[in-house]
Structure formats: structure tokens, C-alpha cells
Amino acid sequence: MTTTDIQNEIIDNFSLFEGDMESTLFYLMDLGKKLPAMPDEHKTENYIVKGCQSKVWVFPTFIDGKVYFEADSNTEITKGLVYLLWSIWNAQTPDEILNSELFFIEKIGMSRMIGSQRSNGFANMIKQMKLYALAYKTKGA
Amino acid sequence: MLNNITHIRAQFPILHQEVNGKPLVYFDNAATTQKPKQVIDALQRYYELDNANIHRAAHTLAARSTEYFEATRKTIQQFINAKEEAECIFTKGVTESINLVAQTWGKANLNAGDEVLITTMEHHSNIVPWQMICEEKGAILKVTPINNSGELLMEEFDKLLSTKTKIVACVWVSNALGTINPVKEIIQKAHAVGAVVLLDGAQACSHMQVDVQALDCDFLTISSHKLYGPTGVGVLYGKRELLEAMPPYQGGGEMIKDVTFEKTTYNEIPYKFEAGTPNIGGVIAFKFALDYVNELGKENIAKHEDHLLKHFVEGVNQINLVNNNAITLVGEAKNKVSVQSFTINNMHHFDVGMMLDAKGIAVRTGHHCTQPLMQRFNLEGTVRASFALYNTTEEVDVLLQALSSIVKFSNR
Image (tube, rainbow over the protein chains, first blue to last red):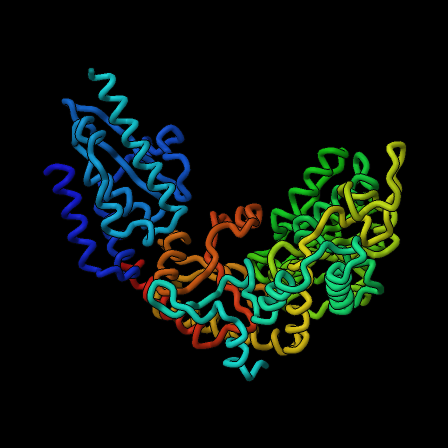
């Protein structure tokens, strides 16, 4: 699936809650559980996403022209947020990651859901994942 | 008890709103209390009718604002039963009050090897100012430990207190645990070794009767915004002889008697410590908060809040009975105010805070600016519910129901 297809699916799924905050949060926490386990040895200072209130780790690898992410967080709601990014960008090419516009964020009303402080943290996760993609693109080129 | 709770709630406009589609339940009162209409009206009236700088000009508005400003000083003097108004200095808040004492009294009185005695449950604002002055002076910071219920270990306090102790800086009521410390005993013991005592009254003054003369404390710090008044206003109470002997804190307008380029002489207390234009409107409106609390009666407020706390703790115990003790209460001192920290098994406090917010319930989550205290309990942080005079048992039930569903979710 393309990053656009995946985002459309996310928007459809969130629309089922019709803006009800509590069920949305429960759903987000359930999504977080779908994130593949991240080995503890990759949860080091180097792979912490800076500027997040919760702890978030993102560990990238580059295989056959595609970027693979391992990710985790110490809080469940944030883990759900990380999962959303992971589901869109895991196993995509650097170009796909760098060129994709994350239109789902506004459509699902993310900022109302998580508040400004967490929105900043979320923006940092996005920035970090794009930086990894850029690094691999530069390296691969 | 407060019987007319509907009438009381009607005085607080902010309470009558929905958050995330649910009626707001405000349980973050230990962070800041909401303001009654009287306080909001006073602030507006000041800027609409009376705004002028104080203690300076000869015109009518200046006279009026000065009169109202000083009326608050009179009210706070009576509120804490200080001997005289001059012993009450207006500051930005408790943080500034403590920094003022550390930087002036501390500068004049601490020497290398002297000791400053605090407790494990201090807010950062009663730790860091002392660390700063200790470092500058070569003095030593000592810390009285606590037990698992969150009570001071007084036998350890006795061991730590000595003639080397120059000041005991102690929180009267813990913001994170709600513990009421035995301050009368602490003051007597400290005085017996020649130490002075600063009480951090940020949390205490909205719950407890305050009588600085009966307590015989040397300094007391008060926060307006935790006492139903505006933010940006605090008070430092100090005994006259101590305040007079202290060097000034900041230099500037108001705090001087005469200025020449060769030498400046300083004003009398309290003005010596009130450099610059203060938060005049905030101070004036603070009086209305104090009057409001006086009108309801501290004893009645305390009984009401105590009832809410007991109701909450009983409810948590009920949830725990059928959920394998999923909620852990943090801070179970015998003598405490209506502040309750807790954690939920398998749930991060941030997540709990967000889920409660989704139900319109405002609580505090995190370390509550007491990181050393959290370390003492091996916690990164807690969820904290704190109850005030306008809260109801029905609101506590809303919180209990929400916690119950979070606990069920966490067990999935």
C-alpha cells in the first residue's frame, strides 16, 4: 500500500469514534500494542527522540533500498501515536517517506486529541524519522 | 461543613463549562485554585477605575490604588496574625519569597560549614534556592527523610538538627502528598539550637488556620493563586528584627530612602524588599480572595475538603477490592489535607491524565516539582487529585467511575 492509502485507512478508522475522546484514546492505546517488540539493546540514548514528554525510541535500518523502523514508548498513548507513523513509513523507500505529506494528522483532529505539548513531541518523531530517511537517501545516492 | 455548595459554585464562573463534551471536574487545586467572581470583578474594577502607580503621585487615582493595595496588606496581616503589617512583604509568589530569604538572610548569615536543614518532601522552590546559596557560601544542605506513609521521621530530624543548623526550611503541607508536618514542634526544636525557621506555606494557607505568632515561625511564604487569588502575587512574612537586619534583595524604585551617586540609603520594611512596580491589580484583588475564605471559614472549608478526601480514598479502596489493588495511594499520612497522589498498575501517569481529561476531569500528572520525593518512592511521577472548597462528592464519584474504567482497561 502507498502512504496515501494507509493514511486514508487511518482516517476511516478514527472517524468511527465521531470525535469521542475517550474511545479514541482507548483505540490509540490498543494500536500501540500492535507495534512489534523493540529489542532493549536498541533503546539507548542515541535513539531517543528528543523533545518528547514521554520516552520514545526509534531505531532505523536500511535493507534493499527500504527503511525499516523499530519503535517504542514508555507510555501507551504515545506508543499508539508512534504506531501510526510506523504503519505509514515502515518498509517504504526514503523518497516515499520524504515526499509523503501526513494529511491524516489534521483529518483525525490530532492536536485536539493530544494537546499542544504532545503535538510538539509528535512533530519531533516525524522530523526524526524523516531525518533517518534523508540520511539513507544521501548515503544510497 | 459547607452546606450551600450550589451557591458557592455559582461564585466560580470557570466551573460552569464543558471539557471534551463533559462537565468540567477541576481537581488540580494544589497547582492553582479557581477564582471567585469577587476576585475577577476586583481585577476588572482596578483596571477600569483605579489603575495608577502606588506610593508615588499626589493624584486621586494614585491615592486610591495605594489605599487598596495597603488594605490587602492589612488583610493578610490579620489572616496570618502577624504583629504588624510591615512584616508582610508582597512578592511574585512563594518561589520569589524563598529566593528572597536565601539571597538576603542567607547571604548575611550563612558561612562555610553552616547547615541548612530541609526535608525530602520539599518542592523544588524550597530546595534549589538553598542549594544555590549553600554552594556560594560553602554551607551544607541536610535533608530530613520520611517514612513510607510520607511522614517526616522526627527522630532523624532530631539527629540532623544541631548548633551547626542555621535555618530549617520546611514545607508546612506537602504539595505532592498532602502531609501536614508537625511545624510547631519543628520550630520549637530549631529555636532551641538557635536556628531560624522558614515555613513554605504554599499549600497550607488555603487549608489551615495560620497564626505566625502562636507558631513563632521566623518566615512564612504564601501564594495568592493557591488561595483563590490572582497569579503573580505572593507574600513573605518575616519577623521585624530579621527583616530589618537583612540586606535588600533587588535594587530599584520604592526600596530606597535617598539615592546619590555616592551612596543610597534604603527604605523601611516592607518597602525595602518591594523594588519596582508590583502586581498592583493582583494584590488588590487578593484581598477579595482572603475575605471570601474568611467569610466561609477555614474550619468549614477544611471539614468539607476532608470529607471529599475520605470519600475518594474509600472509593479507591472499593475499586481495589475487586481489582487486585490496581491503584496504589502515594502519601497516606495520618495528618493530611485534601491532596491524594496515586499510581495505577500497568498505566503511565501521563496516560491516566489524558484519559481523565477525555472525561472532563483535570488532575495533575508528573513529578509535581518534587523529583527527590518521587525518587524516594521509586516513582517517575504520580497522578494527583486535589480537592477544594467548590468540589462536590458527585464530582469525586465521576473521578472514581473514570478510574474504575481505566483500571478495567489496564487489565485487558
